[in-house]
Length: 628
Image 1: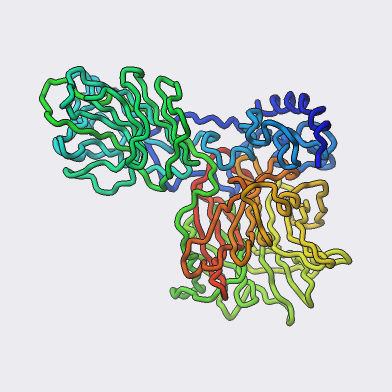
Image 2 (image 1 turned 180 degrees about the vertical axis):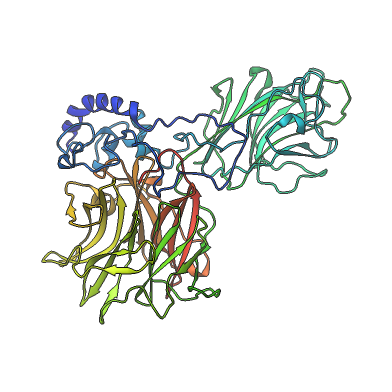
């Protein structure tokens, strides 16, 4: 426990150092992207060796690195203080400090890398994300689609939209149905911060019986035709008769404001489920409003007009500005899918349960996997980024490695290199488990296991299990492993080793075990933790872990800026829960995480109560500095 007086004595110099550090930290604005393309499968740069600059400093100021002076890196709390017992203000709550503002709630910590995980207002500039802002319609003529430039769209309804002489987009429609313009690019709102700035035109001659209206919204609706009423996930609607603008969320009218109060209306949707409405930059909502982000939404300009008359002033839009940026939202996964396994040279799908797996991505973007099937190790691969299929490099009757008689294989971990890949593999014999290491040949995919364990049982530790490995830089790796002690307790050891995973040295003074054994977050409650996957993303360490509550397994996430202090992402709630399918009736565990083609792929094991099956989910990732 950190004493309250120690916390108070050091708060001033921490704030000063933090302010200096945050000048460099991430540069995470939410600048608009308007190059005209959007891809629902887009996200982050590949973890497989993208040529990126050294990440800027963050909370800890030492990434990508580890907190030890003899490595040429700053030690301890990340602010130049040499005593790891002194927690910076962005980690107060981890130690029970009685501060008014704790951790990421403190305004000084808003752009700290680990605080950005799961936040919808802390996003990176991502090229090719959003459709271009619609150009001015002035002088555009009557051809609506011709006014869009490179932005693709299609018209719907009757009568269809038109452009007035003064450059107003008139949605069309009649007294029964909507007409409008559907922008065809798809937006993944689970990972995208989307800003729609609408310039509404209010008709001056719209009395009480006038049904003219114009709207800009996002919708997951599939059918747009002459009998369409736009089903708005969230949108702003201008009413001509009332001369007001309303916020609509999931078909519900949330709040309205006089239309004359603003020339620019902004609908801001964040992937953590928050809605904001601004008029000329001023926030209007009087209480928080939420919505359910969808994985495949599209932007719609729509409206209706009871009595369309040529030359009459209509409700419409004089312009629309679209800005989008990618956020790191660890719960924004796609639907759970089976990971298809094939035997080399055979088209048939394998139906053999997998007891453990580890994955990695090489510098070409190809995925390599190590799987344990019936207590034998197999290597599998797939070209490109399609995560749905793996092909074994050998046949089922010819495993890549079989353990000695009487021994059992644990969960493997992989780390790809420029020539060969490195393999960590627990092997249990007579109730004790050693952590073995070996290589996977970069050409033949043949496995060689060294006869000398990397970590061996000793007088204190009985077993080393569930390893994960990540690259710190070109010469070092970090290994996290679950340790079972002879007197009963389970903890997690963190080791640094050479690039070849040799000569591991334990790092002490870290607080990983504090995060995994104490109720350090409201949503964290586990009877057992097992299965780890460590990656470096967006200038922070991210450690996925499987956790059991009762008989059910799910997957959680810890994040850290310096490998010393760890916080629970998503408030400690699980970032992946079972989907209710028969192969996940008992839960999900065994996470393995890779980055390729701007996607995060989380491979895992679905548990049906008797066997485990390989499955996966994917999500968009930020392109703001995936580092190795």
